[in-house]
Length: 342
Image 1 (cartoon, rainbow, N blue to C red):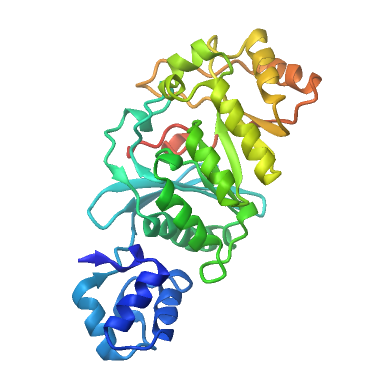
Image 2 (cartoon, helix red, strand yellow; image 1 turned 90 degrees about the horizontal axis):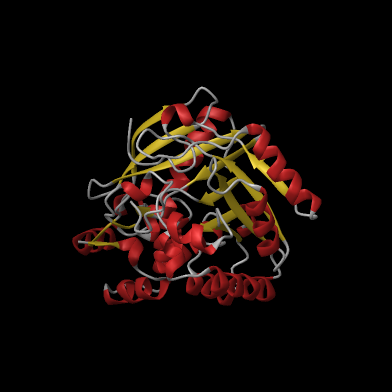
């Protein structure tokens, strides 16, 4: 049986017409799926019962459910999502004052195998469908309202997986999240994070999506990046820089660089200078991320004094820099820790 949410609007129209109904029924079905977020065809109560029965013979709504969730001491919440086939992925709710950010996944596991990331050590299972990406936002919004008293303020595609290796489904999900026929979330509240998939960045620019782009850079030294992030061997720093320049020219948006500070690996004076030189290619801001230690991964967090000095060097070169503090580490919900563990 096919997931009805895999159909485009025009495919849905065709199905409706083939079932002897008028075109406007397609709009009703579409709204039930993407505006009202129903979990079954039976819930589409303004459709004739005969049409619902016909649709149910060929289609279902493969919705996502919450399998479990854990709350950190700092109020961060990690949610385990069960997909229709039993696959589990994770998402994280991060509260900050009156803001709540949802960090969502786009793949079950990850093919990129970055040395510092627990997700990369998992077996890659599959891409998530657009409806599965969408459902995480719907469910996390409900949890935000229940736990923090208000809904989501921002969405970041920074959970499990590389979004640009699941391009079609991710862009389709963003369309449903931000479209007037969907949830109507402003694209400026959505950030997509990539390890640097060059063709994907160019496609995003050409699509004209006004979402924010974050680059998981972590070092501007090509030799170090080859080792830390194998993706750099096929998506080199030089080509990545060209794609970022292209993105900025096409969209007018500045990018954000994510930089994980690893003790004695990428946190010295020379590393800071190389990062500053790379970041001069277009307007940007830099997030310095505290490393979250993992018993299975042989890296340590950069010392506080060294982190501050690294920040000072960048700011002296007129860079906008923030230090992103670790959140949810006690429940394995922090950056780089998502690996379906207790």
